[in-house]
Image 1 (cartoon, rainbow, N blue to C red):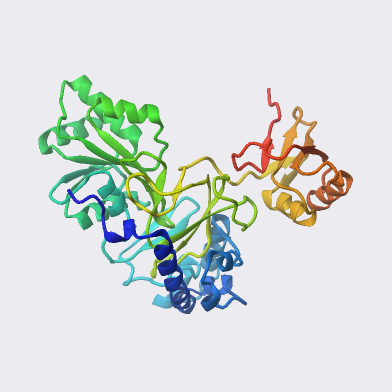
Image 2 (tube, rainbow, N blue to C red):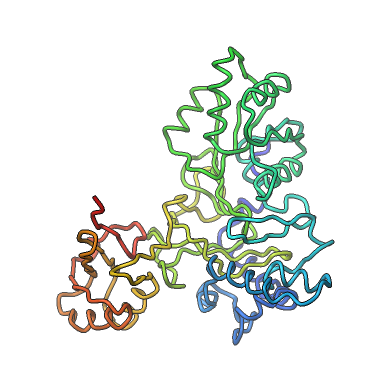
Length: 423
């Protein structure tokens, strides 16, 4: 069987980087012309100058909360029903396509609305399905929902791009799922790992064998090694893919089982939570993605998820960057003494004082008696009183500043840790 989905998966890393940044300025020019929200994000920045990661880092990060607020404000300001007005109203100026050009529109919690364009494998999951061993002529049992959110379409369009037939199983009706699998003998499953486990356990109760099912592509949930081993014991090789309704498929697991390989056609960064500044390779931070999707271009979109870049290339031969997978949420906003404290405020403190490496604000104490301690990796000569004054200026709250040894704070992406007791 063909080892790779296409030749791009094994491009030299520097060649891939060159191609991506050659395409980026033209993609942003098109986006700015049709998606006014992208034009606003680029205000004062020449797209032609964004020819490197260092240059790209000057663009403000767009976070999901801002996308939601912009869409909501546009819907409130709706004035007329023309196709152009509808496109701007529904998608908040982020989409380059509207009714007619978009094949489907979806609603994610918020709600945030996302378009689906007409091109094959719009969401980009075919590459992940291929890495999971799915090939043309196979039957795929799709266990993702087919309403409101695009997960069902993500997997269906990917399977169709590979030349597969799809059974739209969706969720629920477990006994009927088992019967359909027994009758149709699918080669592969797409959906959450928990639902496939429920189906297999129901099949055991019913005394039904499902020997045809040997491959699975999971998304939407964690897929720990223990669960991987459980499926392997049932003769199923399960792989995971990480994506979202905003971005499509971002990264996917390969038979090497060493991290997730980044998808082609996007630029992925890991930044310090609360900032737009990239962190060194290996350090945990927020996953930020720029897509080259002409229909729904997103520029430096902050996913709110934590991950870290892995060194080197995958042993499977794919040369794109790898991430460790989902490591938690980057939005660590915490209420202290009735006031919200945000990671952005801690980032502003660090910008004011040179010589600080990692930092973590630890909120401790019992309910009603909150104590804030800012632990910073720095030289003992750091003026902690000046840092504490900046913390108070930024947050309107007092904090103790504690200097710790470089490298002693955990590399887990946390900027704010809530260590209070609630018992």
